[in-house]
Image 1 (cartoon, rainbow, N blue to C red):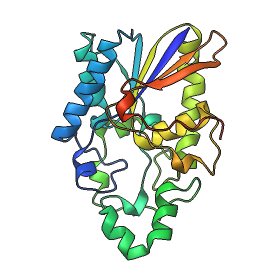
Image 2: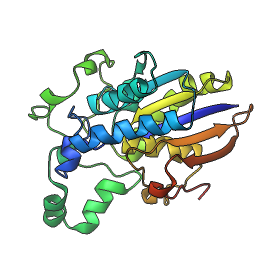
Image 3: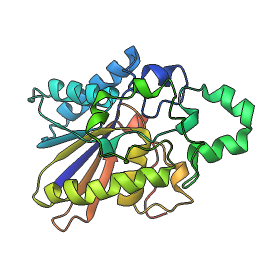
Image 4: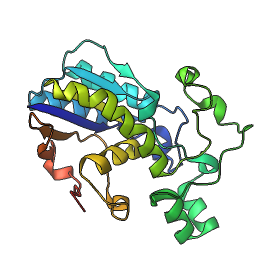
Length: 239
């Protein structure tokens, strides 16, 4: 048996300000740091062994991961991969969500934010926010950095990485921890739980509450649950 632990990073500074963050490399808020610590304490409480850890290029996910590892007295050794980055919000990056909703209307807002295959307008090449992207982006192959993404686009980078890298380690009985983002984890959960294009917009990924996915030897899912039942969100399975 192997275990996959999926953890959404704690609240970021821009989460607290209700802004579209995407690839901008903002840090955790005070609340976010506490949520990261809570994730670490929950994993420690349930005595879950961690063999390999992965996170994105963004400091809010990296800091969440390092906090979890420290809480569990583990070596700060982990893998950073751009494929686990948050969805790129294009020209919405940096905008306040409520103000944007009022400006473009609730229907269009929902399409940009939660639809499966609709992307916001692309970010301009001279956008002031590009300089605030992670310095680790320099290692991304030329032409691979997007200027906007839908959830489908995010899925198309997250799932191949899972299939190539994560699956191999799970099949060897390793326990894997992934610290990532609302949309990159939503994309992965869509794949793992066979959620339809129409239903995936209903999937909520809570912060500071690790989701445990236990696999049989043939990598069929045996069971899945949040460590903190009181703050758990509904997991859509095969819907």
